Length: 537
Ligand code: C2O
Ligand code: CU
Image (tube, rainbow, N blue to C red; front, side, top):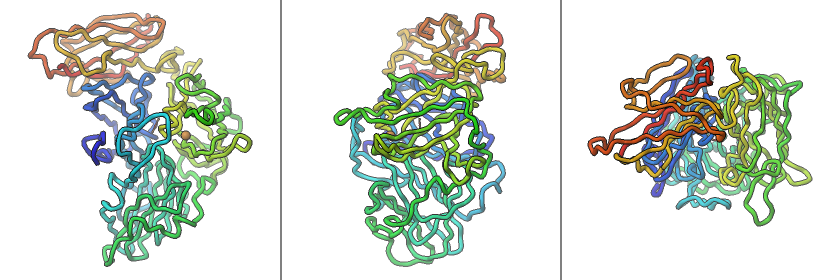
């Protein structure tokens, strides 16, 4: 598509496929005209790799690089996207698949296809109103551009459906077939059969289809709120079938009329944990709109960033009770944790486990309701937000913040357990215009706890990095190591200026920046910061 902002010039971006237990390193080069970040949606990574600017990292400036490193802890179908403004709606989306270590963990299948479903704008997204999409895409193409997904009679096909849209919730069907739903948001289910599935922005379903009905069939997507029209379709084509593919506007009967799958039918098959008999914290979250003429979406009357964090403590049993007092679906996503859904077929012992839940619409008097539980087992500050990105941009987000206890048991209630600003030192450079010119001074900024110490390191990035054990990896070459030491201000930031010699031969060179932050006593509160790079111009 023209006008897109893409990962590796591809729409969708390159598939990242790894195995459970792998350490994954992704190098991001920002060639966009704006700063960006990358978030690994659904995979519970350490806060450091979570990609929320100002919370877990600085922005990746124009012309800068950033290394993400995370452990692929849980198998499943995930995805990645920027976590800034409306950049998702430019085309910056891609799939992340973690295959199970045990290849027999999932039911067997003969073939697999990915379907990344996306809504497409002709130009730049505009904040402050609902977008008007001109196209709907599967794997970056409209219905007309679809390459048929081939099957042979008798085969079992695994379809991984990812809704990477900015704002559209869909219903979908595989015409002529029944779907066996095996995973929701990557997490294993006791399989359930259905003909039609609702899927909100951010959600994923894995479905198995038995190829027992030769022909060329539409895999059709409609708007969840208007199932009378096919917005986009892929084609499931039997190798033996002749004849034409179904026309793009063909509406399968099941798309229009089949009962939609509900969370109430689903039961988790893994070890997602049960619902809590006695939560230690319960939050009621009321979703409202700012009134007739104001495009503001609020949680408990507050619009982010003018909103208070939601405090939790390490190992809290947290319950979120959502009251949707708007007439829209809201796909609510929690970073860093899996949510256990109330009212699923798994009851209290094996509830449905998801990272994004579609909260049904309602009214002021009869709100749409959905409750979830999660265990606060991943210290840090984590975003909780609507994945309709225009709602998120207009306030529908909060931070879930760990407070008040020594979360990791290192004897300190410190920055890894909670922080006024971030759980790790976060480093970045001021002046994001890409003008890191030789002969200039660049201001380095680290965000850390008030009144503590930051040791700065700058140098040529090591190819491999120097492992500091449980602290992480220092990415700087020793001879150019140490730049200086500064204290943090009350605003939790430490700054230092880096003078870049006025030597033209340095142009194009890369510098790595990383910091170590400590309590006054050096141990055991040492933390290695996020790492970023700048390229000299
Ligand atoms: Cu898929 Cu906070 O994001
Ligand atoms: Cu919303």
